[in-house]
Image 1 (spheres, helix red, strand yellow):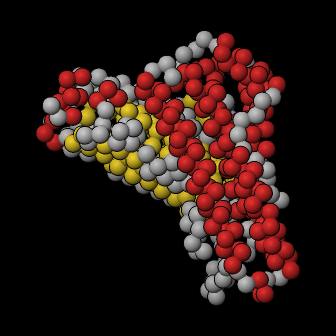
Image 2 (cartoon, rainbow, N blue to C red):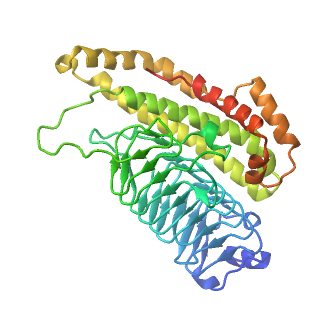
Image 3 (cartoon, rainbow, N blue to C red):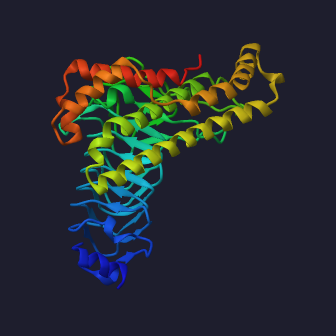
Length: 390
């Protein structure tokens, strides 16, 4: 029997079996009965797991390679590799989703979207024609109160110096996982030049490119356009203080999210085999994301170490020298960043274990405010322990 025949025997719905390709390494036991695979789809990867109620290729052929899907996920068409999709996540046709991507419950993006090293918390909605790589976005309380990425939005994640130390935080992990923060709105036909940090409740006007952090919550932002003109391109780096600071904070947030999955999401996800596969996949993607971010900061420091500082002013020279001198210790601290034992964690985990709701979102939102505050304090300690360069 072919792999397609194995899936049909399990009750997977494949209307045009001759048009579907299933890799020999795919384990049929990891594809739930009732999954719908439309004509032209391809499924590869020994780690691939597809949970009940999932639909592949409803709008156009979809290729799924080493991805983990929980329940009710809809990948309507495109290419999906090394990504994790929790309950109810959805992607429109023409999507290209690459490793490091994690879409949580109900996160949904329309057609022709590119994601890589992207983490979207529950309820985040994106329009069409997006490029949103190297970013984490949280915010919102539900389907009717969600963070939004407008159509034709770009997160610019590659610099003229050739680096990608550009990961941006829209919201954060310690507050975002509690699903009680104001949403963030990124207007259509706009963009962000990473790395930036954007506070909850921010509204970025359509048609603008944000180049600075927005630390104060609840602000309408209409960025000024850069001064027009031409001139020589500056060689090498100017100040890298914000790049290093935002990169470190991003890594601390990834460490906090790893702790959240290892402690909080684990007992609910491991109730089913497909949830277990998603837990394993999420932890694998988060570990890979941390390695990616360290590699990108390594590249910046390596460039600074080789630069000719003769033409730099004294302040910039001292900054670059300090970054190079302190990076080894900072890198070691970032690599080791992880869970902490504290009273706030004990308070949160006790309440979490006693809660009765079976769905993750409902359980989080059902916790008393004081418990959620304790959980945020626990996760914030993880972020803070990663260290923040001046």
